[in-house]
Image 1 (cartoon, one colour):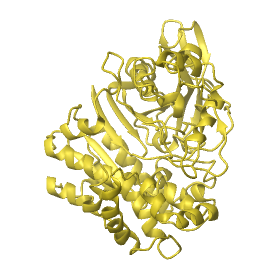
Image 2: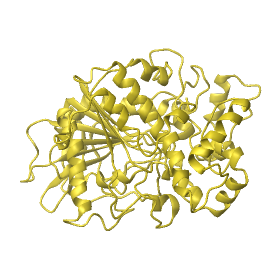
Image 3: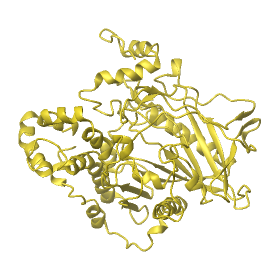
Image 4: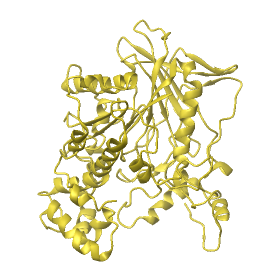
Length: 502
């Protein structure tokens, strides 16, 4: 099975949306004998249609004893289930938007399948390449609703099957006791089970299970655990109201909504069900994973996802400036001794802020830069550096891009609630990959530069999925290994300082 990977590391937003359906003449797909799903037919363009199957179960509801447990195969059914409307998003609290609340449902392990039709409205006879999108959200938020991630741009190409899955988030997806009672990484295991579902069933939808591309963008009450072992802790946590459990995460923040991601990837005890039993940093450094054609991208101001929310919140900005030298090293997660920090932090402050201990309208860009470099550019650089040191890039090339196109819209308005121009920021490339009518209701104007950029970016992804090469880039000279490293030396990226960020 050829598995291409397109990875974007980061966090983003989610907003509360309604569950809805469409009028249709239902398409029907049978997964096996007497186990079928019906969907809806929708418009990709004025002349091209596609079929949508919403909310197909790929695992049992992770509730009761299945909370904090590995996902289990879904119950079989007899007959046809209707997949003409969305399922709720996974339970979450998205702290990246103003006034967040807990939304969603614990029963959320469903996926959406979109398949194009021919120009004449017929189902393709040939098997199409498959693209699986893993939604953003920093492991604590995100959803696959077409109100945010509409499939129309990919469907109008008429060349690929698109699959999107939901997975458990926050404490429900990533809490770990550090042993086999609650090993963690359940959200990743949900993703894996969804991919197995694709392998087993996508052919019934007209997809080629041997041509699959993964891509994605940019991871209560707590019982008194003082005298409880892991088994008892998990037993008690399963009794807690799920909404209360998600809400309780706020009590673990050290300032404002930071740290953004509380429940993260963990290294599990080795075993047949373990998702990760080796430190991911070591995995990247040694190349101990399947090598495939790979494409990664950045935007100039990735740091807008958090920095701009602070810049536009008077209370947070005032407190940050009052406690600048105390809070900034913590926000940047600089894990060094006090003595090392006393030597190191002034150098960072000199580089980014000319030695100043405050942020204002004159240096906001450098505040965005330090977030961009810490959370995105540095891991990007280290990953590329490691990959090209051991991979056969002739056989499994890596393609790197910087998306710097500034269009009419930006996700920064969602992070800030303002229309201030913060450049090309985190998630802005998504504008040209997925239709988002709930955020940008006017869409991309026909014959506009935004529309042309959408066509270029979607074709880049689709051709990569079909051939392992982004054919839109044929005019770009091939890079040597040294050029790949030089690629990320942009935006005054201070490698010498970032090496402290292990």
